[in-house]
Length: 223
Ligand code: CA
Image (cartoon, rainbow, N blue to C red; front, side, top):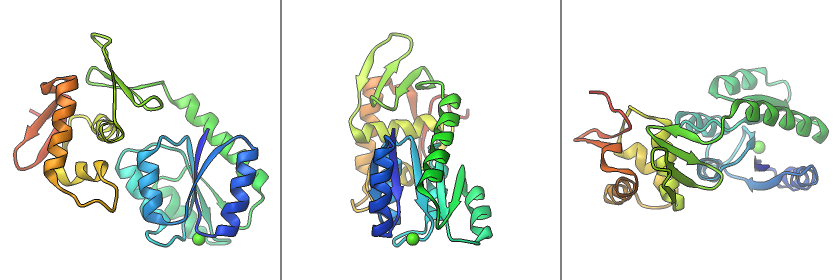
């Protein structure tokens, strides 16, 4: 199981990483909110541990952006002791569980395993929208009708996953461009068009409709 640990306290994250790896997780660590947001959006983690007090971008903002982007990954937040309002704000932002610092690692692991059991019970395999099936582990997409399978580059995968999570909605170029660039790359809408056209060539032009001056619609757009 792949786990993203977002924690800026290096002593704590070093210790947790060892203990979580011993418990069988493959752990990536982010110590900064902006890095965390990008990693959580671009890698298919099974679960995320998110400290709320972070440099770069507050943990609650990171969580809100993941949820606004349609990312359903289970998230456990780490809150300051006795800060009950952080728990309320965290659940409102889309957290699935919380632990207050300080905590015992055994409790963290038990809560993560419980979250994973629930999320596996919820999931129904590949994402299926508009005649396409997206395998998020293999980063491949299949046309349901013909069975034709395509491998996707990392950028194609992130863009298609975002489109498939928001079918029938007008998605602005700015919003879509956020899916294909990391936070350091200069944003250029011509590059977005190149990727949209690549997806159209693979899966059919009619799958992504251009709405002039507004953006793109995936699947059955509003008439
Ligand atoms: Ca912190």
